[in-house]
Image 1 (cartoon, one colour):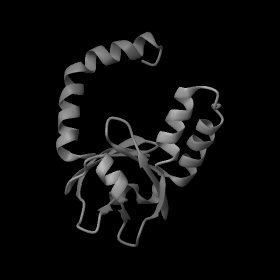
Image 2 (cartoon, helix red, strand yellow):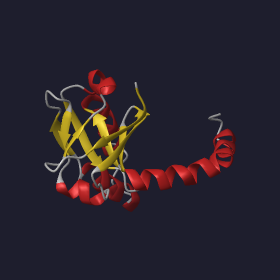
Image 3 (spheres, helix red, strand yellow):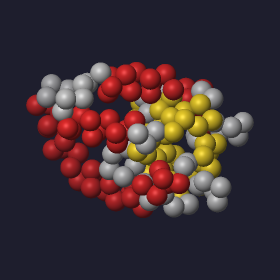
Length: 144
């Protein structure tokens, strides 16, 4: 289970150490792709295969579906997790997420989100002010 929040440094070679607590769940290879809100998503390979299959089966008749599939699938990279638990972030993804040296790794149960630390702080500050309203919307959907 990928939960919690950890701060790590992106080194000059664009390597990011993944939290040791998550490594068994992630395996020796992961998929890194564009995420939402200018973050990156990191998936264990098996979870990615399920997600990618669902996305590819959603049909290509809709412009929105095609565009989102291009966004997620077309920007995905498979990368090895080295012996030190590090992954390499490709330049295109690093630039997309505006990652600087300080990166927040946030566990989202079945995936990880990678955020520039300043962007994470701004996003969390905004969400903290909306938590009650967001809970109300989830309740309306029958989720809470």
